[in-house]
Image (cartoon, rainbow, N blue to C red):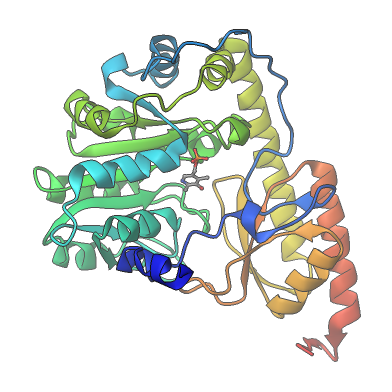
Length: 368
Ligand SMILES: *Cc1c(COP(=O)(O)O)cnc(C)c1O
């Protein structure tokens, strides 16, 4: 009986490889979780609201104006969503006709662009970035613009950590003006704020920017993100968003996190994280089992190991949970490591040095 029921699912869903979130893959309480790019420290908030019998506003005014103020935009250029992930989905819902339109994304990158397009039945054009520099393959993108409504670019890119050349992004905005939207996912932009594209929204009506409170703001648990765009695009997205996407406690806490004192605290955490990243990268470069450390502008670093599988497994067994990137395009033997507190970084390096010592054989590494 259940077999017949299962057959009712849409074909693209039956064939879907779902997103593998860090929380689904595992790691237990008490583990050192360096696999989801979360903030290693938390901020204490209390919801001030006590009664919940009424629905919230669809787009809570005070939250929209707090975020607009933070990014220096007008309220009508801001949409608040259930995490940046919902922004990714709403854009496809609103702009892409299944079976007709396409999206471009540039792997290795965040997987949710692919997953959301697949769920919607929208064609995907993968245009890989250039190996090791991880910059855009602009000529290949230009050749593939036919049918493309959305181009997703993650900046800084997850998991490689690089920033895209501003010249390239502006070139892309120019060649797509009037025919496609360029969606810049700035989930990690606070770690490299000078590279934000918000200043270009005025000039480019085809520019859309995604933001979140999940990373630098240390609020992954409340699920709150923002889409920044021309007011006419925000209006279209408001047509497809669910009626009450932001619960009252979420709104309450998000508004508090955008008060000036909390923004200053966030900026201090970013400074700490960026310092820890520099320290960690230096240490990793002096660790024998490490083949290559990629430059990063975010709260994680991509590392290539000589013997990747054994490193990953050994650390996992010691309760240090990292993010395996080995199956991703052009990322053989790579692991993404979130930047923890300095103590956590120290602990990680200590274990990697022990691992190196135990596994080195006559100047090389043994995979067995
Ligand atoms: C974490 C992440 C998101 C998701 O943000 P949420 O606001 O938690 O949904 C979006 N894009 C990228 C690149 C991310 O790494």
